[in-house]
Length: 115
Image 1 (cartoon, rainbow, N blue to C red):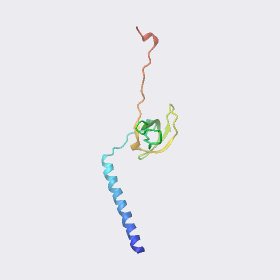
Image 2: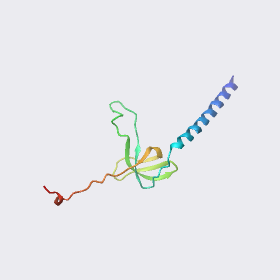
Image 3: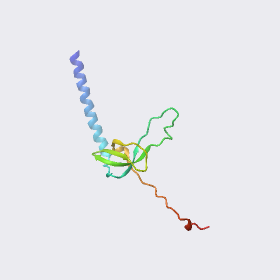
Image 4: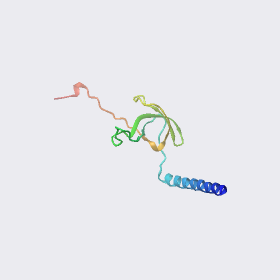
């Protein structure tokens, strides 16, 4: 009986490894390599689970901006941008990051306004 259980656990473990490898191959077919660089400003996907009194639908999905501090394969270390008050994030996967485009608002001088 004990030998049968050990054999069954080994078979299940082997099947899990094979399934994981097959899923990784399929995922990587559709995945493109990110083209971020150190110092670039990015947003991080942080969809949180709903909490009592908070609507998941109305919460912000993207948090930031952050600056990329270091790159390690598909993992990024992020520090908060000088204009934000967020805390640093150590390891963020590339799939959870998108580029941040700062909104440039033109400043008008008082002499430019005509009525």
